[in-house]
Image (cartoon, rainbow, N blue to C red; front, side, top):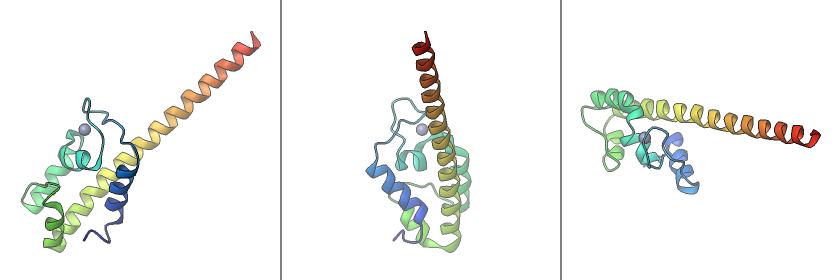
Length: 116
Ligand SMILES: [Zn+2]
């Protein structure tokens, strides 16, 4: 019953169908939806805010029920999810840009080596 919550669903889907990268701040942990939403300390602050609003802690089992319980709870979860997703998207773009830059540097090096 998470229809209408496209962002969250898309993200879950993405995580299921792509290999999860490792979480950059938790050693040896896959950065999947369950980790970032419920466990990762990077989002402790946003999670605490959400839990204060809905007056309970969130778990993968309780989230849907929490969201359905009231408009306010839905909104609070939505705000939290948006914050997390936005941050992850920025990180993803940074990773991509760094990879591009690395590739460009390597190409540049290769060209120099060819010249020598
Ligand atoms: Zn983490």
